[in-house]
Length: 260
Image (cartoon, rainbow, N blue to C red; front, side, top):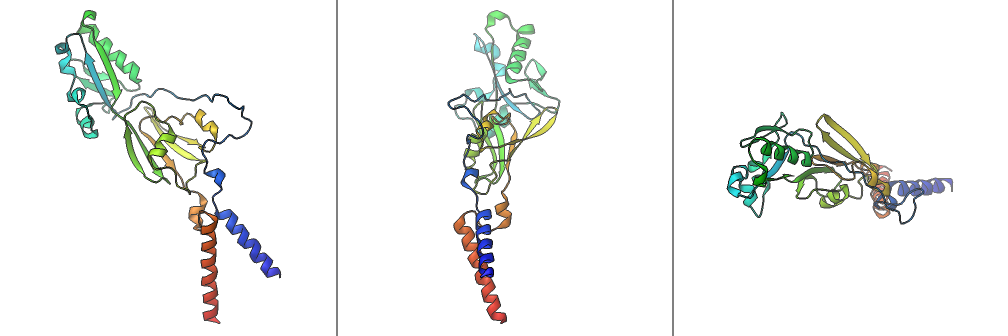
């Protein structure tokens, strides 16, 4: 009788601990004392340019011929490929400079996109154009690049042509986190001009929207680590765990009978 009770408790313990609870799979749950219908503040800082960034820079004027030298083939393309952006865009070199016609080397390291636009426009108006020329400068990142790795359906780097990307959008574009991925401790490695910093975000908590890494920045690396259930190998659900236990018991019984 005692042996049966011990076996039953062991069976229930393995079955419970090996399963992934449903609360660990739901995003943005309301935890703790949260006021209903409130607006959650979102933390987002402007991106600052780094080496190896590729920029799309266009210069317009009342007379297009005056600024034709600044505009490459990208401006005239309706469908832009990653290869075209790499070959024809303005790359920030290892010294933080962008090499432009007439202006030469322009240092933009650590500048926001808006600061970079203002600097280029100021340099053009200072020595090369009059205000009456109607100079209009546009600066954009040549795609929002990020990488997702770990326990997601599709790993790898992606480029989106938009200004803002949330971590939930990035994960959705990677086919979502697998059932054995840890949604409570997703790592985001972010590059800064002075070095790299690692953030941790709990995607099951609605307070994740207040995290500094809820909105990704270009070149972010997102890593989803596996839950302990993967290393245990007992199964992700109760049915899978039951199947594993039955297989083990069947193997043990067969071995016992053969050795008897």
